[in-house]
Amino acid sequence: MEQQNFILHNGLVLTMDAEARILPHHSIRVSNGMIEEIFPSDRLLQEDDNNRIDVSGSLLMPGFINCHTHAAMTLLRGFADEKPLQEWLNDFIWPAEAAFMNRENIALGTRLAILEMIASGTIMFADMYFFEDEVAKACEEGGIRVLLGEGLLGNHTPHFTNPYEGIDFTEILAEQYKHHPLIKVAYAPHAVYTCPREILRKVALRSEKNHLPVHIHLAETKEEVEDCIASTGKHPIDYIDEVGLLNERLIAAHVVHVDEKHLSLLASKGVRIAHNPSSNLKLSSGFPPIDKQRRYQIPVGLGTDGAGSNNNLSIPVEMRHTALVDRLFHQNYESDQAYEIVKMATIGGAKVMGVEHLTGSIEAGKSADIIIIPLDKPHLQPIYNIYSTLVFCMHSSDIDSVIINGKFVMKNKKILTLDEDLLLKELKKVGHNIREKFKMKNHFSL
Image (tube, rainbow, N blue to C red; front, top):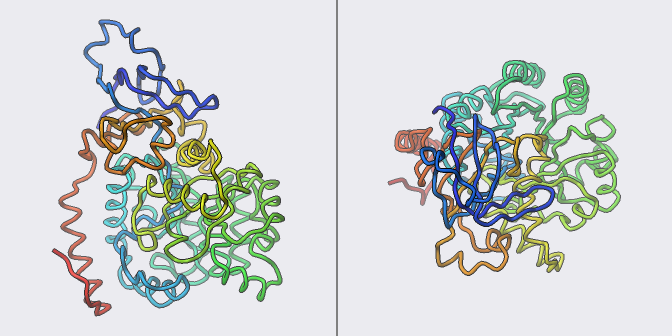
């Protein structure tokens, strides 16, 4: 779809910029994929009639950013739901990945994830999985931004026989897409308990040399921390600091089991955190001290994790879970709590991904990555605090249209870039094969 020049006319603009401006009855002029200006709607000139899109009664805001997921795990949604993390991984997920996560299924599962994310307002996601060249192709086709990372383990993966091949492949992708408007690349070692020290050290050195970010699971479970201390004598955060990964290029997913000392260290090193509330709750991993993370001014964004451990890819759901559990655990009733959570979903996520210069807020000179949310629904009215409405009242299905890089990828709830019917038809075939392979009872398809 070609980029358009158009004006979104007469909406409520939530900028999420440094001044946190809220602009009623304002219009946004989009030109060549960029936000050219934001102006009062009564200033609109007659010559703009032909490219005017009336959004009266709707909220215009930055699209959501999903800072941690495994997109193609849509194929494993609801698979072995009742298991704790280590049993879920060792006995179910890894065998299923070995059997089914080939190139074709990664391509399918990623496109299904993109459908789901766009429909719930996501304009960019960070992926850690396999066959990431297929992920790149899917994102080009879907028109969505991505920070992709080929998953690295200490042994073979569905894609490579050893992690060194995966490291080299990451750099090939980085070179291939270095000028692409939507695609960025990171190294993606899975975790300290799945990657040996020499791999983590190699990634640290290559990251410094090539100026590429690193995306890793970190301090997700109590078991991970205990095992790392038993095997290395160090907490996982101290351990990756020792191998050279703890720096401003690191995106750390989860960071649940940490104390004040480690938060101070993370802040001093410039580490960024992807908070995944639904996955942490579902796997009983715990809940991180996000109140203290904010106090230490650590950049924090929201992630969904994969559909295998969530089981959806909706940032609006993550916002609500973050708020409710933050209140339960930390007694956080601060007046700015909802604002801070919307910030995590937008400009905060952009900072975690290293793209805050490009997206995450509605400002002249930034990319037109905008979602349109009609507000004329009973469950969204009345509005006393727009941030609170977004966090506690909004449903994913409230999002009407999504613009990424100046292009409508969803308009009037219809996704324009991918064939949903065809993808769902293919999904049924794969789902049937997985059920047959694992002799799963009480599972069915229509």
